[in-house]
Length: 92
Image (tube, rainbow, N blue to C red; front, top):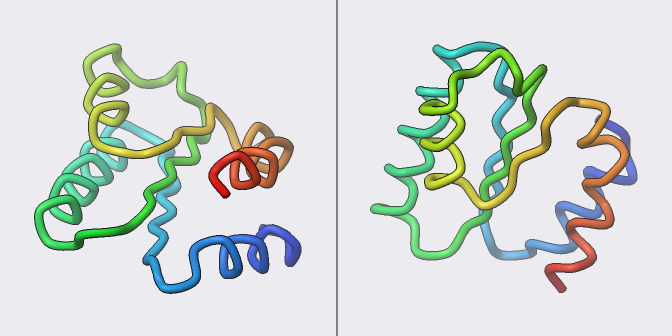
């Protein structure tokens, strides 16, 4: 992850936890969804991001679970690198 993006995450969510999950397969997708749901139960304010290695490797059911549980998904690492900063800017 580049330094500019890390600094933007720190600045944007000062005081709020940010959870960034890398998802490479079904097992990671399911674990990430469970984590996000647990954070929703225990942490009042936070943001969760999913960065997929390749979203097309997941079933529709797994994608739906993640969509319901997390705040934002990026379909690939390239998508994240290209669009994450703009996405953060819209949340200001």
